[in-house]
Length: 147
Image (tube, rainbow, N blue to C red):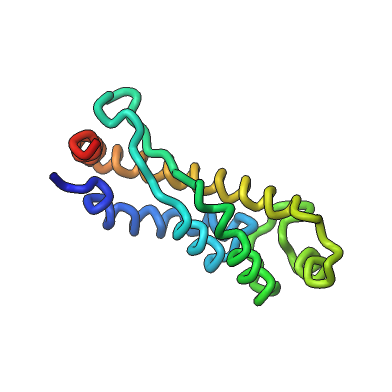
């Protein structure tokens, strides 16, 4: 039995490289993204069903990682990359937060939701990559064996 996640290490590296521009265009820095990915695990739902099988992200640990992500964000507010609009963790928001004048927890929940959306897009990209490389059926079969 081979763990499907071991099978996709090289594929994850390729997707990481391809996905870097999405991270750059997001409200997260690369350091924050690294923490987000540390708090995320991936699973294959319905691996035995060729048409229903899909890679999904388990982000249940993400909310617990938010204090560290916020800390990284506030340590270097000038490193905020990407755009977005409104209250997305930019320099002004970091200063307001440091002064205790920012949103009372709303930003954390918004950040969690933004991170969940980005991680879901990553999972979709990983599955699309595996399909394009002709590896999806093998990976899916390995996941089905380990259920």
